[in-house]
Length: 228
Image (tube, rainbow, N blue to C red; front, side):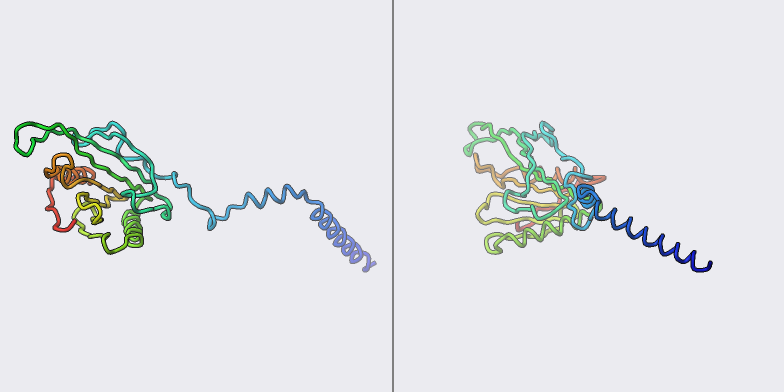
């Protein structure tokens, strides 16, 4: 009588093994594949570049201190020189701003209608990581410039961090990158008006634009660094 329960237990265990083996061997392969596909492996997943980021600050047709935003494109470069494709989680916009002005000729005999153009770049990155985005962007400059006729001059005069990118092939053009909170703003502008040869007002306008982008902005006129 004592051996009967043990025999029943062994038979039940064998039956379970047989059932399990049958189920595994006849499992629909499509179901198995779908289950593998549904596994979320975060370490190999690339974040969506457009998720969680603000849109461009400037909009087409905006009036910015007398300049009109003529065009806006999404890009992967800044100053059309430094490629930032290797940086994930950023959105870059390039804006063209134009302002109609009137300047007198050299002999001051007549007024010449002309215009000033400023290109602004917006680099929008993750929240609360503005300094890190600035550092990674600066490292890309260092890695991609030749260090001879292309250099950077960190000035920390504008926004929370800033530097000038100098290119001897474009001596009449200033390239300024600044960090303001979570985002970076690049400004490309002429030092003199190419049509008249007179000093451009763009530099003063850029300083005002940066000041307006700053939180709780107060009027300020930082002096122009000696090297740009």
